[in-house]
Image 1 (cartoon, rainbow, N blue to C red):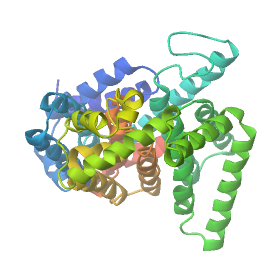
Image 2 (cartoon, helix red, strand yellow):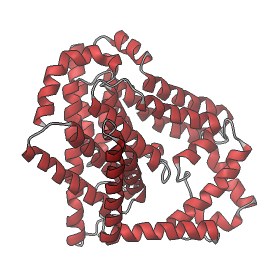
Image 3 (spheres, one colour):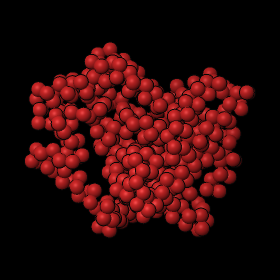
Length: 417
């Protein structure tokens, strides 16, 4: 197979990965591996490597991976730590996709992902109305294709990307109506899903994204838009019983844990884990325990200092907060390295406004979502971030020569979508 043909195959596999993510995990693993392996057999490999050296998000990802790998030297559990590090290798999809994807395929990947998410969200009413019970799937947890925690981020990111597309694209009234209906279906799925981290990520990101989308408008317009967002969130809280109950129970569990020091429910367990985690950070503030070394230290502190929490959180495989997970493993150095990825992502030299807005949407969704779960320790949300960051980064000026050769095709697909 000729190198140019390999590049075409890689582009199509990216589209397959985008379509697979909301629907079928097995295809996700296969597609991700194919992209990483086939990247080395594309044409102009030396030129791609040189460009990636100037791509700040790629550099930040490599620094984060290197720091995690080096930290195995002082980890108390390097075997488990190495397994976690291997999972982080999915982040290499960012440079692989960014340096390979043609603009026309970036649009196709977006359509594939949002379309597949729409299909998966459409399954949820069927589970509820049909009273379906299959393994973990039931009317109380209608996420049919993956864990409700992972699914919450898939739905949040898809809804935000559709919103960005609506705000940045010129389209016919009929097509715009179709996208609005799709946005409503995905948002409805987010509200029906019981994963609160994605709901938090979506709501908090709106507060940042809406003013950003209106950044060229007068400030009274931006303030009025934020008021509208606040009213919409309040109305949703009142009108959707499932969402209302999840918010109330979460707030009650956090209050009970923080004020009354009683561990009740999932949020209470998260607070208990954070309390122990703070002690780990205090003891290892700069470089942490090393990747994989935080949970042995966590259980040691449970035995010695926090026996009242042992039954509730002793089973934790990781902290339910990405910042605490990284801070305990890699200390301040790790937190700065993690945040550097997002700073580089936000400040990329994007050629088109829609891609810049998409970077803000995806980046903020993960930064807020990290408060509830360590989404970079979970395969599907990790691959979703790497896919989105790679597709969005393909619009960076670093890769502009390849982009120019495909600009006409991209404009055609943009008008179609």
